[in-house]
Length: 169
Image 1 (cartoon, rainbow, N blue to C red):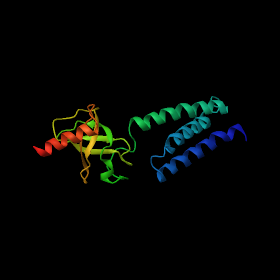
Image 2 (image 1 turned 180 degrees about the vertical axis):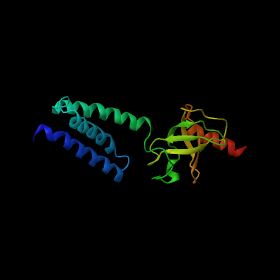
Image 3 (image 1 turned 45 degrees about the horizontal axis):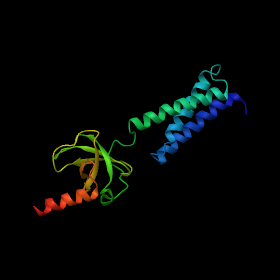
């Protein structure tokens, strides 16, 4: 294979991977697809600078790293509440963190392993939970609003005992 055809193959492979991402969202094909496409385009536009496979490989690694950082930093697929893959009952006991201050009336949390879109509207029964605080889902509700409380070092037994005391009062 001639070195001149390598950039073209990179562009074709990169675009193919980005198209595959449309069929399997969240599979991270877009990360490597972006890296391959950028390296291929640079190889086509600047053949004297990126004439060797090693130079193109370095570009793929650098652009791939930046793409992955952007993909994760800006939560590319986490922006809406559509596409949930789990039933609400399975969210009880899941942990996550607050992305928008949670009060008795409003707030948003991100749940670890919470489905395709892991951001949920959330409420707390008492007080407020500040942004960045680790939380646990105490009541998935059955709708689209979770009841959460701060993870403050108490375990499940302590929480259950406290809930039972509240019920008896």
